[in-house]
Image (tube, rainbow over all chains, first blue to last red; front, side, top):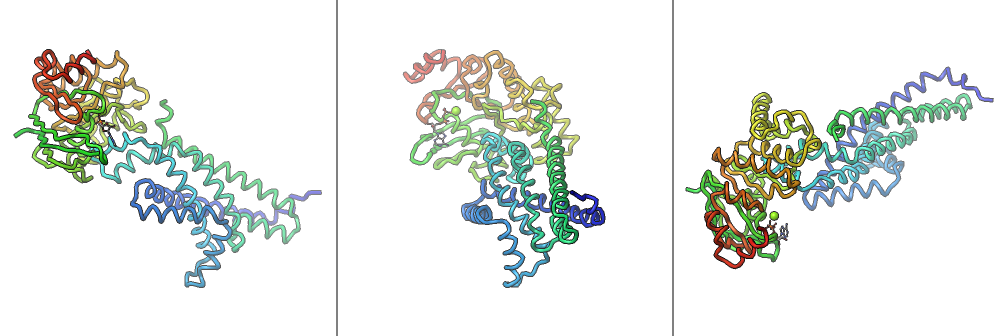
Length: 220
Length: 242
Ligand SMILES: Nc1ncnc2c1ncn2[C@@H]1O[C@H](COP(=O)(O)OP(=O)(O)O)[C@@H](O)[C@H]1O
Ligand SMILES: [Mg+2]
């Protein structure tokens, strides 16, 4: 027999866990994409040494498990004097992770911008920063928007791991509830359902933003 | 003093000697047609004039300023030299109006209202006032190229460089673009165009420059030069295009 009603007393816990995950997702999505955009720009247009540095960072993150990155930041860094709260460590770890993966994605978008666009911007007198902002970024993001959206969803789902360093997110709530009422099936079922809802919402938000940013697409 | 002055310009791509000592002097208001075989260095010449490419020897002076290809220099040149490309290179995510308004707004720091007024004027001039809010992808090639001309004109350049700007167009669309150029020529803008349109060069141009193997092989009055070429190379070239 299943007893979903046994979860009701813990609905506040689920709700606050959900909110924590939402907050963290919004924050790290913004920060991660900002980091990825900066790194992709450096990789595409930057100087030799800066490119090497970015490549090293990206490969380091993409070839190690997220949980190890998180533990390193939370448990490892204090030994060299960086003491971080679980929340801070999570924000940093998730941002760095999304930053690395999105660097490669956004780079592909930048690569897709024709030389002609850049030359047109140059001969109109735009400086490098103006060219990025007004000419390059929007069409570049349009090309890779679905991939970027998926990566953000992946990182959001991966954030479940931060319950391991006792950030009270959705997964933390699920663990806590099932340890109290032993309703593991119900607890994780509901949690899975909530993550699914978050994924749908996140994709929906991205689509909405995409419609605004890429209005020119409709014209084709 | 002439508006554009090239003195013994040499340009290399690696070991490849593309421009071999170009001397060329262009006065304000002149319409110069540069003709020549593919690979003779016509595009490279234009791109050296506006600093898109660096050259290794000689000198180029535009409107009293020495041209180097430093980024800052390209931007300063952009104030006096406009360029139009074979493939239009309009910004696809901006409407026609936004394409034209962009540089006046962010480079010349004009107010939005002012930039819009300029943009509407320029689009009127190329006959596309009603396309202000359309996206480039919805326009024909000929229309896109006219928008590109309007975009360049919005910066009130002294010289307009055109690199085979009708070559990517369907034959029936070439006329509308040439017509715009003709109007500009009548208004006295300085035009340097790489072109295969011999009729245009003859009827509208003041001078034809024939390039061959990285050199100015022959130059002169279009009506004289095109009917009475002096060198075998030009004869051969004209035989091939006419
Ligand atoms: N970026 C480049 N790198 C190396 N070689 C180039 C480059 N651009 C042009 N060239 C070479 O320089 C020569 C002249 O090119 P170009 O000026 O484009 O000629 P045209 O416009 O007369 O056809 C050609 O042989 C071409 O292959
Ligand atoms: Mg060419």
